[in-house]
Every structure is written in C-alpha cells, then in structure tokens.
Amino acid sequence: MERVSKKEYTVSQVNRYLSRMMQEDFFLSHLTVSGEISNLKMHPSGHIYFTLKDQASQLSGIMFAGKRAGLGFRLENGMKVLVTGRIGLYEAGGSYQIYADSFQLAGQGDLYLRFEALKKELMEMGLFDPMYKKPIPKYARRIGVVTASSGAAVRDIVQIARRRNPFVEITLFPALVQGEGAVASIVRGIERLDKLGLDALIVGRGGGSIEDLWAFNEEAVAKAIFDAETPIISAVGHETDTTIADFVADLRAPTPSAAAELAVFDYMQFVDDLSSYTYSFHERIEKKILFLRQRLKEKELKFSVLHPKAILQGKQHRLLDLQNRLQNQMRKALQSAKENLQDYGNFAKLMERRLSEDKARLSRYQSFPHLMEEKLLKARHSLIRYQDFPHFMEEKLAESRHRMQLLSEQFDALSPLRLLSNGYSYVRDEEGRRVSSAEKLKKGELLELHFSDGSAKARVEEISNKKSR
Image (cartoon, rainbow, N blue to C red; front, side):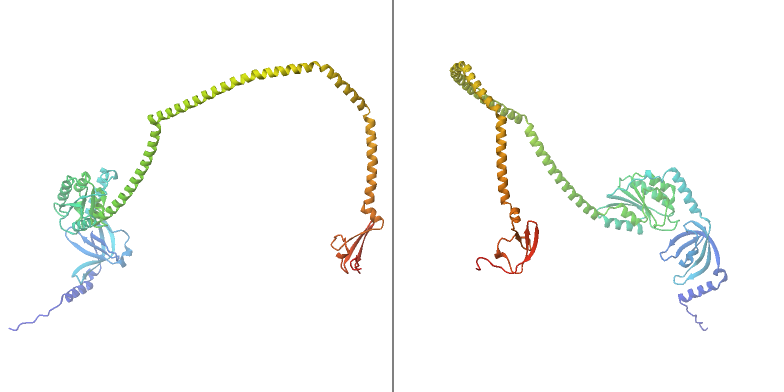
C-alpha cells in the first residue's frame, strides 16, 4: 500500500488562516459582549488593555488609542460593561481577543460593589480618619515587610533599602498575598511583626487584577493594619491600583519600590547632614563658649569689685585718705593759729602807731576853723570873678569873629575859582587826567580847557618848553 504524503504548514500560516476566518465570519466581525472589567492597563501610547470576564470565563481585549476619543467615562476595574467590537486573532501571540470599538456602562461588578460597601462602612467607623495616622519615623533602622517571599515586590524593597542604607535591618514575613488563606496570612504577618518593636512595616505586593489584589480589600486586613502599634506603609499593586489597605494605612506608597524609598532613609545623605549638623553644632558651641568666657570675665571683674576684700581695701584706702586730709587740715589750722597769733602781736603795734597818728591828726583838727576861714575867703574872691563872666565871654566871641573873617579872606585869596576868574584856566587830556607839564603833551592831542564860566576843546599844534630853548 502506497503511503500518502501530508503537506506541512508553519505556525504563521495556521494563525494567518485562522485570522482570516475570523475576519470573514459575520458573527465575529461585529458583536457586543457583556462582562466585568479586570486587569485594566492604560498604556502610555494611549491603548487600553483589559480583560472581560464573567463567572466562568474571561476574554482579553484591547481598545486602540484612535478609538479612545469616543469613550465617555473612565474605565475602572470591577465595572460591568458592554463592549462592542470584533473578535480577531493576534497572529504573533497566537491568542484571540476582542478589538473594542466602544464601551457602554452596564452596571458595576460584584467585586466593585463589595469594595465600595466595605469602604463606606470602614469610613463610618473612623478607620480612615487622619487623626489616627501615625508618622513614619524619619530615621527608621528596623523595617518589617509583609509580602510574598518570592516575586518582584520583595526584591525591589530589599534592593532599594540596601542601596539607600546598607545598615538597615529588614525582617520579612513570607505571607500569601492572593488566593485562599491570603487574608489570614497577611493578618498573622502584621500581628507578629508588630510585636517585635520595629520602626515601620511595609505591607503589600506587586500588581495584578482586582481579584489578585482582593485580599487587601478584606475587613480583617484593614482592622489588623488599624490596630497595629507600628506605623504601616501600604504598597499594593501599581500606582493606579487602590485598595482598602491604602485608606487604613498610615501612609500609602504607589508601588513597593516607592514604599522602600519612603521607609528607609538615605544613609549617605544622613552622613552629609550629620557632618553639616556637627559643623554647625561645633560652630555654635564655640560661639557659645566664647560668649560665656566673655560673660565670665565680666562676672569676675564685677565680682572682684564687689568682693568683701576689695570693698574692705577700698574702705581702708578711703580711711587712710581721710586721715591724711585730717592731718593736713590740722597742720594748716595750727599754722594759721600761729600766724594769727603773730598777727595779733603786730596788730597791737599797729594800734599803737594808729593811736599816735590819730593824736597828731587831732592836733591838726584843732586848727580846722582857721583853715576853713581861709577857704571861705578864696571862694568869695572866685565868686566876684564869676560875676564878670558874661562880659568876658562877649569879648572872647568878638575876638573869634574877627579872627574868622581874616581866615576867610585868606582862603578866598587862595581859591582856584578866584584864580580862574582872574583869567587863569586848567587843562585835562582826552581821558580826563589833569595836564601839569608841557612835556606830557603830544602834537595833535585833543585837550579840554576849563574856565570859571565853562570849558573848551583845543588841539595841540606846537609844543615848546624851557628845555628846548
């Protein structure tokens, strides 16, 4: 029997064939599928990646950036939606997915409703109140981590913590972070690490769907975080993921890596700050010491002045000075008394001399009546002369008038006006200067002649003087 050969096809050929079949299929080319949004990712390019699921199955999907403009609301995990689009095959990956043209809000999924209900309940209980938030220590040295023992989250936390501070002590509690038993494991990890007296705890995991993160939306985990004495940083999923644990925790970090940044201080920066603080502290201490030394010198000086010994010395100097002044005053008083006593002796002699002088003066006073008669006689003779004083003054006045007349006649004889009236004149040059000599004249010079009754202009025609004769 002859063997029948079979044709071989490549994977690409098979996927391309299936893709064309789906494109040509009328049912798959345009349909609307209902389901709940999960694993929602907003790509930087603008594309939206998601998973559409129901109770039994799930379907991957994508909405390209060009179709996103028609989206009238913000997609969130847990939303129940109606997706209109086509089913196609992604040939490179060999997986089929729905290429969404539009979304319609059909209602919210069960997980989303449970999330909002628990959020509202815990908020009313006060578990989210900022007044209960504990501050994260700035220089935490012992950090506890509640997360899966394997995975990107714990690796990122350890690497960043060691890079920032190689001396930090990290205590890991390997917990289940999804699936059955995850809630109890996370609660147990928080309670055990809280008893160790650590500086801070990081509770979280890497990203995932809302189902993957659901353990951190349970009330038991929320209350364990709230009841812990140790400050807790929540680091669940990616930046866009939000869980109940984020609201209850003392601080929310967008990612586990960010939680490590927030919990562990930068050791090198700490060393630099410490050096700066040390320098500043020493500088302030030196200034303070210098200030206190100055104050001490002032106090010592003030103390030396106010010291009883110094005061006593001052009093002794004062007493010595007063004694010297008293002795000087007594010496001066004694000397003055001696001088006064000597003066009293001289005074007696002076009194004797003045007594003899008074006696001689008294003898002269006895001849005083005769002297007064002589003075009275002289006064009478003077009075007789004063009676002729008016006649004497008239003679003196007539004599003065005669003398004045003689002087007036002499002055009139010597007056220049009298000379001018006798035919004389005086000459001035063009600049008004008086001409007193023929030698100062020049031929052709204009002169001004002054007479008793006026003046005239003249020009020099010829000059003759005594020297030229």
